[in-house]
Length: 395
Length: 65
Image (cartoon, rainbow over all chains, first blue to last red; front, side, top):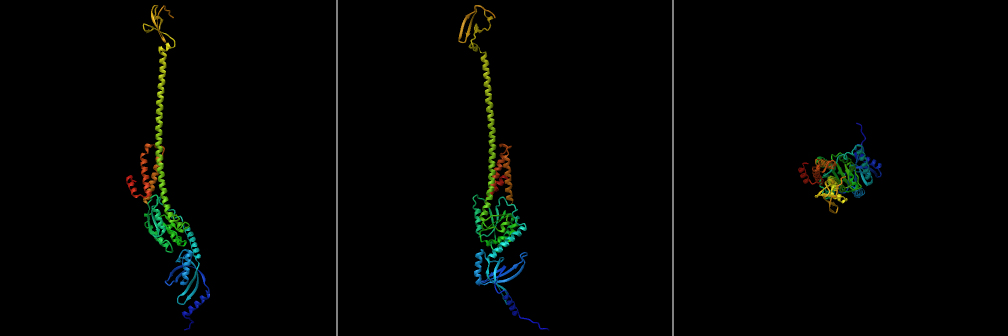
């Protein structure tokens, strides 16, 4: 049997260690994603760093890393102060590491420094990629196309019971000046950090199981650091919001915040208090519509009553005119009769200078009724005289 | 959703009724019943918007809405 050249495991590990130390004489800046992070009681922080395929998300590389307590107690608050967020799994980081190798523990990366701005930038890039992907998949209009009830009163709220935003929302809604009543049911969820997307999706699933009991679902989260709210840019959460069977109304963070979840929601309002106002205004607008109809109704009834009164006034006027006309006609007829009577009245003849001859007290209109020696009475306008006939001459 | 749909139906009925009452061809004597019905629907809508469930149910029974 031929004797083969061989070395022991320690010697081999020494050669690997030597090769690595020759290759990495200085520290290097390393881009990676945190897969696991654990701080032990002695203050050291142990991490697993990974790199994934950006398209398939398949794991391409993995390495253990450690930030010794002396470094970790500086790096942790520094990162938190710069980003407003703790280092956590799922986060992309740029860390300065020293490659080291141990015969017992293998390859290890010792972390000495971290660049928080890289993490912020990476998150923004990730956000843009998420937006582009959702646009390609046609998710942006899906939830917005759902009809929202005219009066969304039965509200499923996904939030945290202790969140100031949720309490503000409930108080604002309950104290509305119109006295509108709403039904609010809370579905608790973690509203920040790496656990938030899965927690919110679970809460949404619980709402979806009773979708018929609600008019809309509300995602509420009060103010927070930009990094606290990164979870609302999560792709899976956005897909769940877009495809949710009820309209999703979001109010996440401050006035200036605008997240991917807001983009795919049915309606986005800046803050939880503003969302309460938005709902109250929706009800107030409806009440105004009803008031408007009542005004139209009153005007229509009044217009008809006035029209009826106008018709009655017109009829009364016509009756008054008719009566007046009949009265005037009657007066005129009397006048004519009076004039005709006047014409045949003997007194009128006397007034005009004529005489009336009376024989034996009766009017004698012919000379033939007289003979010489007859006595007669002559009537004048202003008196009578007795006379005797001397002679009669006929015409 | 049934109650919301009901509200929208009642509002549409109210709107149509007011339009009918506004018709200049119809005189005062012909709109009495419609005005009464419209006033009842207005009261119903107001209570519904305010969320006064007890009043809504009472009105629904009375008016057979």
